[in-house]
Amino acid sequence: MEDFEKEAINTALYWNEEGFNKRNREIFIEYMHFPNIRLWENQFFIFETEEEIINSFDDQTKSLLNEGWHHTVTLNIKPIQSDETKVHLLLHQSRRNKNNEEYDNFHTLWIVTKINNKWGIQFRSSFLDGATHINEQGY
Image (cartoon, rainbow, N blue to C red; front, side, top):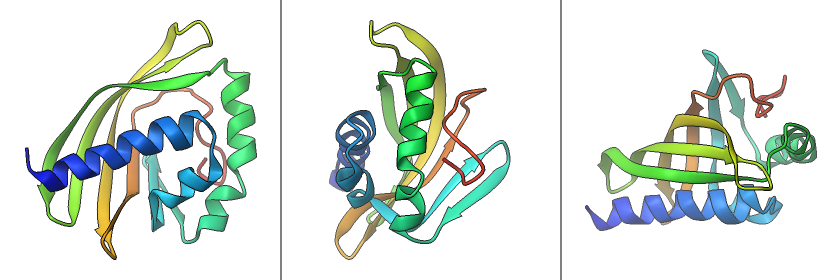
């Protein structure tokens, strides 16, 4: 595995654990690049700025908690296409409740880009059925 692929993987894992799972707004935003794109049910949601995503952060947290979410585990992650500034990652993830019981298992494609010498998530496309991970604004 190339060093740049490891860097992209580390970025994705850190974002998921420290930003998404711990609901840390600063890390959540810091490890993204903009525009940030989300593809869900064949519909694109484009976030031009940090503010567009962060404005729905609390609603997303509330929706996750309402579905019984406690954290998301990355079961597997691997680069499937890459160069020194862009890595396509295939992730296998599991949403878990507070007892660490899985209630949703899905695959997702993330594109992690290196802009201004910094890695960040710029695109995510998940096969996550019926979960509250998205609303009219794309989150």
